[in-house]
Image 1 (cartoon, helix red, strand yellow):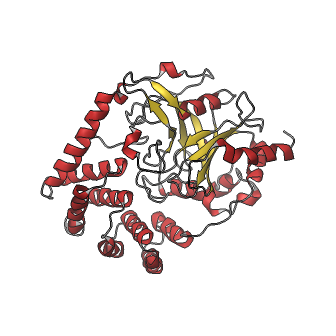
Image 2 (cartoon, rainbow, N blue to C red; image 1 turned 30 degrees about the vertical axis):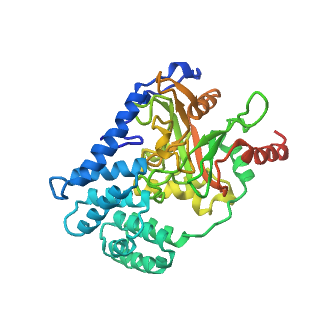
Image 3 (cartoon, one colour; image 1 turned 90 degrees about the vertical axis):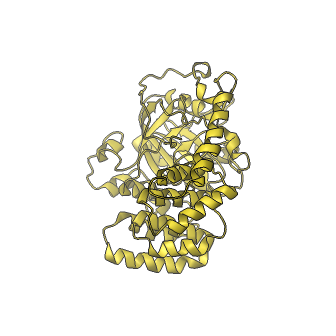
Length: 426
């Protein structure tokens, strides 16, 4: 099975026009029922079952990797999966390649199997690879928060030995902030600051618990907000949860909070993303630093330039700098896209019928499995709303603002927008 890739295999076709996309023009055979049935059959019978039935050795290790990637993306857990993960953890320190260990840890974080804490605690203490150590530690403290002081002490010692390691620095910051709920600064300040640089901005407001989908709105160049014909705020459902659910600074983890540059729209050749137009985005340091800004900045100090996009009340708010820290580490390829993955894989999850990704922002899309045509798409609505107004470039800001144990709707953010517009008489 080919591993689901969020953006690495995207074939881009940038769009300069403001013409609207139509639902009728979007179609793919990948969502046909026969294709979906075949995918499930291969996923369960070949990628997972047959792989885990093999002895684990150098010749079969790649099959175990593939099984772990599939388990993660589709969040598959049963007795067979448990037995396969147990075989992997027993061999973890003896013979597994780095990429296999990473795939294993990602699957472990995704499906949360019980009974592995003592062995994972050992891995967290002995793993020398910084990223893998961070993944193991994140798993352990999630399962047993009482281990947090020990993990902090281990990281402090690792940093003494490797002071320049960016992953370790991000892990230390993550552990220091773990469990804390810092108050989000004034949203009005954020909206008002947009008038200084005058760029279009998409705000992706998320729940602190990413198991529940968030909502995106658009502030246009003139500072007003995109609205429906009836005057209500235009709002678009968006999931910022990765399939693994790993922390933001880990590859394939949840979407980092913070600022992204929108560089345009594109289409994808990746079957799991599908043909619906996506928003191409860049994190700080992903491309040339000056290309992150619209218009370009003359500031050569990255943190100052990034902070200039924020009002004073937000400059010291740690969470809004997650995309900066993740980009500095080297995380890339986070975009806003649709999905062709059958939502029934996640029917028991709180984010259903949204589908998780490898860390991108993913909108809900419903396809007709008999015709391959798009029936419903929050992604298409958002892209059309974005390109209706001038300028292809802009910014997107992800903020964990709400703490609702449900999917957010326009009704959650509309009072905040309305009160801002009344205050500033827009």
